[in-house]
Image 1 (cartoon, helix red, strand yellow):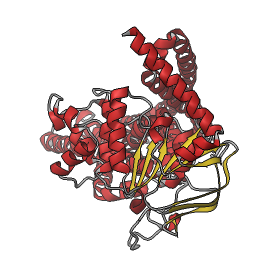
Image 2: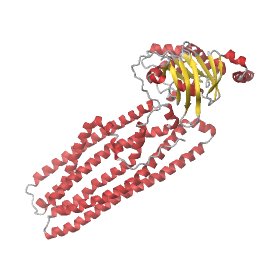
Image 3: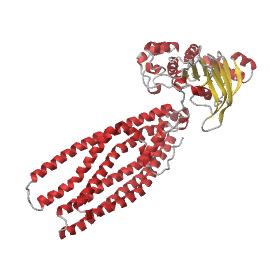
Image 4: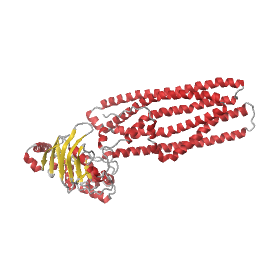
Length: 597
């Protein structure tokens, strides 16, 4: 199983600055949020002062003169605060929702542009964790964490102003506690960060395990290894439970320490302030205001401390999201979009070397010339390099050394969109998208009309079975085409490739997973489709490539034999032996089936 990247750097606030580009389009929402939170902080800081005023002017002197005006002012402030609460929720939810949408969109767009080599080394579960739970955690911290931080600092600022107005000496007890809290925060945040990074990594791995378990459910049941998979998942979840508990313990230790410091400060104010009230140095209302301020001052500090803890835990998620967004594709499309190139289909491999990121060279000094309209069949053992050759043609990978020319042009100078729009690719295991039959065929060319879709289906012998479906071309195919047979999916994928009218066609063992009747339909369709197009056919059944212009026998990334079917059979070498062996096996199977009948 692929391992998630480790992140070892210390907490870095520069990391969060990289999300500014996502926040910028909503700067007016952000400005509104900041304004509202400043007002909220000012009003929260004003309430203890109003209490002090009420005690000193109405409670202590036991007088209600002017009290109705005080009540009106107090209720008006409460009404304004209620409106502020509505506005802060409105702005914060908007920012969180929009950010999640934009970051997920950017992540999905990045996945579309990355080369196949990225998917060779990255599990689907890891990507799902980044696009879903990681982004949710990041946007939650950015929206609500920002809200709490602005509120916290604005409340502390206005409380600080009131402290100076009332009695700066008593205010020192509160102010002197701030450096202590700062040092404690620095100590805990790094510990919490390391632990939450581990939790996020384990969460990603568990998501990957879930994905594999769901995708491979049938294989799991066939092999009867359910218990083994359950034990593997149990081990992962147990480790995540331990790490999560440790992270929670660190976070829960941090908050009580902050609260304890606040309580000590409040106790000091009560002790010294009480003596000063007794001595007549300050009023009773002032002492009550200071007690309220000592409690209230540490509440925003606790909230900021919590946000810092959340920020620390979310940084691991933020790093993973940015790691995805900053991933560079191995394939760089640097050709100008307006290059006037009409692809004809002449292809040349010249001194091509290629290897995957991990492993030895698959191709070494590989050379091949293919004429326009020529059908090339690739034959060889598994791992010989057949799929690598056709993937290089489609520029899903690029040569490590050497050049591939299309119509005499280095294909790196052809825009990828232009190249891929002239490429038809039918895989051994066809993949259909959720939606209707017509929608899946239209993926080959998004502006295709219904008549063109039907004509493409007729060309590949798919029209008849489609019309027999419940809703014809409007039939839903299910997730991944699950409602259709393999052969039906293959015919639809063939129609999808044909409708684009590509100049280059690639068939990767397109008939290896279907029954004899469907193979006949597909083979007949292939004969029509390949006419006049430069084509590469990777064949499992050699009987399907007898009409190819050239058959290349590939072994260890080199062309072992080359020629048409007749010439290779006359050589009585590798291809001959392979063909005869397969022919005997197929005839034997056919006889057994007839005997059983």
